[in-house]
Image 1 (cartoon, rainbow, N blue to C red):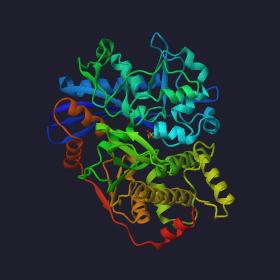
Image 2 (image 1 turned 45 degrees about the vertical axis):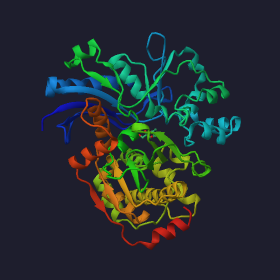
Image 3 (image 1 turned 135 degrees about the vertical axis):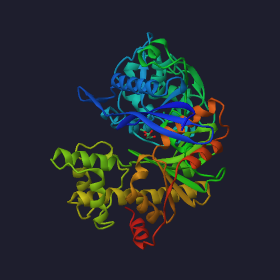
Image 4 (image 1 turned 90 degrees about the vertical axis):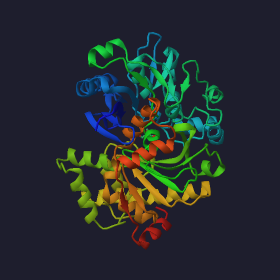
Length: 486
Ligand code: LRH
């Protein structure tokens, strides 16, 4: 396929990639140019991100793009996970290696914070789900470093700064901080002041699709790329993924999405944030999307549970590949034991299988004692949680959800797709796997003048990628499991 090439730098908590999106005006094809692992960097017991290593990996990917596509490369943009930030000094350098959101310094901080400022006030000002790693609690946990900071950039903004010198903060990721107002659409400075947090380091917020600058001279020299624009896509990975959901529907919330990866983000798309008492009671979040849309969703713990089990198995000398684990899970007895996947004890335990076993013991359930049973417990519990969240979303919006799109890396997991259909009683449409990179690329393509509406972007996705359908099977045991409340 030939056409204009837009480069998506797509960083996830477990891996990063530089992907070329070749857009011929009607369809888009993706080509992965460079993939690299990501994970925490441990410094004196704390969890950080190794941004210099990530930067050199991005450079490798950009060089590969220059070698492969030359002058056809039209723009580049970065997306990453939410909430994490880099504090920059006056000279534009990080004041310290940025923290990983699973770093334990935030333990107990959210509880103390919400005793000082009521949850209802925080929700009214931000519309964001209470999660212990939100940027708000991270700032409270390390407020002493803020005095040294001239700027706070979120993770993708930081890489944009390295690419083109821009210090803008992009809107979709700003909405994950829990100090951005969904109705005012500016920083919730009054809320920060109530916590006696400074606001001097908060810069201008720009919308997805803003041209941030052109590639710096040193980056061009090192990579061989030309003087191309650096474009802010929807820099929050979930926002990018949801922009690439291949739905033909617009307006009503009759479809839900699950952006499935390390996290499962389960939600609906709305024209504006929903700050209702029901959304607050359901601990839902409102995250900003493309074209001013809002994603009303819940963060569900996601495949992190399985990733950490697998890592623990490896430490014990049992190195089983992902597909093998899924086969074992499929063969295991369904719904034998279930966890609340969103219990904070699963956020970052030292040993995930041991934590799951302890949960099952504490709740009087059979302890999953094989790899297959453990993984089955994770997947059943996720599917059950999706069912609950879909119910809450219907209650909050008053709109029935008729179909669920699963996008992202987790949409490859056929077992989880089927369990999701069975548990929710809704048809599941799985794919595309690379929704995040696609959403990133298509926002850039729109800036180049090739597309107009969000519906246009989604039409391109539908015409370029097939989805796989999973129909719900009649399984009364899911209703029973849901009734049992676990
Ligand atoms: C998913 C995600 C999600 C979480 C965050 C930590 O990658 O962006 O929105 O809140 O990572």
